[in-house]
Image (tube, rainbow, N blue to C red; front, side):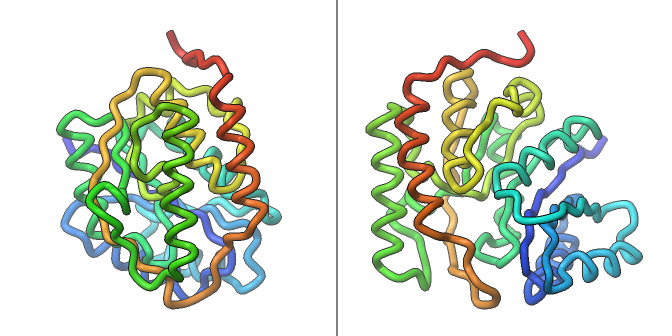
Length: 242
């Protein structure tokens, strides 16, 4: 029986990319379902998804939220949806093609071969980033170094947002206790999985900066992550299920 695989894609103003990324994922040999979580995009992103749902009624899902509530809360909403609907593997992915849809298969294979969490890593085999300003590359690279230093978690790309989870990970983590909303959320989820004893494997990818649309990154996101990581070091972690 085919594993049920769900790709969660949060969106805000992604009309330039959303149709293409959905069609690319559905063109892959392996079968993936997609859940778009749209935070009230004023550019009509959700309307584009709704039109595509007439072509993919069983495979394309949409949750609309009323405003920009944060990347972390979008993924938590998606994770709960995945648990409730009995998926086997759950993926995080950006809408802007910075993550290559073809790499979904590599993350899935890593989990099939023993990983509980597979990370699409920009830094496991050098620095594999295309079209980023050098300042942003340095900031991202050393942010991961900071996370390793503070937490002791041996993950090269701690802020990566391209991941695959076995569903048991999301069933075990108390998702209501995940607090960070921006890119610190990516660190918090990895560290929580690590502290609960799950096996994390990094899979090398090439990250390409978006060509269309605008980045949602800002200094507040990094500030939350910096303070949040320090607090994580002193938190106690208990599984939701024994």
